[in-house]
Image (tube, rainbow, N blue to C red; front, side):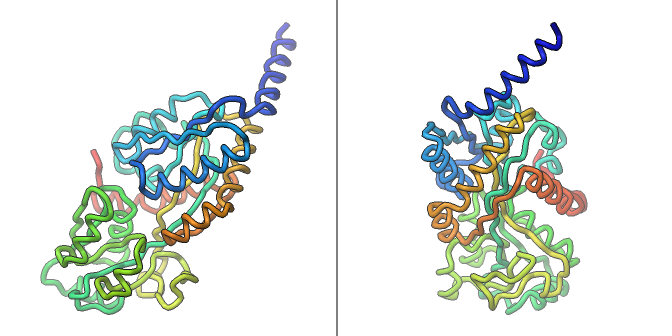
Length: 315
């Protein structure tokens, strides 16, 4: 009887995988509509809908740096019908919150890394530094710390700036805003010295309202070949990328996981995704579930020391 029951379960699981999807899929989006996370998630949802002839519903649940949507996903069945589109905060929230309503490593199944965005070190033109080495020297001699803006505690701008300060051995004052745009506007206005952020609008740089000193990627960007990396500008080993990807709840069937991962990579290579990324300065990535799992772990390790040393906490 036990053998028959086990065989029945196996056949059921196989049939489920072959039949997937046979009902609407929901992709939870942990931030408000219109932002980068939302835009990329909707491209993936649209591509899935078209390829699978199944309704794939983008579902925004913003709040608590992505934790609200993440908790919903973590408590959902691992049947592939509830997915979660994550950003960088997914890897660093365990470092900043004493207690989360889920375990980031145990309660999720990484599916695929979708895109990465290099960030630029941007300063107001009144700051007397024309390259990163001059900025570091300026910060070291004082008389008071430079200020850097971000889109909020734990955002990619916050962690990029904190990591820069930590690795360069300088002190900078963090000024968080409710979103990256207000922070960038205050850098342009001269109320804050600098920001490490995605160059979503090159117009501010070409018009002279902002000065770009370096880029946060490990190698120079083909889009900005004349802009040196932070690593080659006096901070060896520095890398800080904003990134986005798709995860599911734990205990997903291997065949279902493979099907979703392959479809996500197909969406990543789509014309719609390329247009969305080109508009915002991002790069398509793709990759297997194992590669994304390793990437998330590496990102958590990358920021662990700076979060601890700088006392960064979102509680």
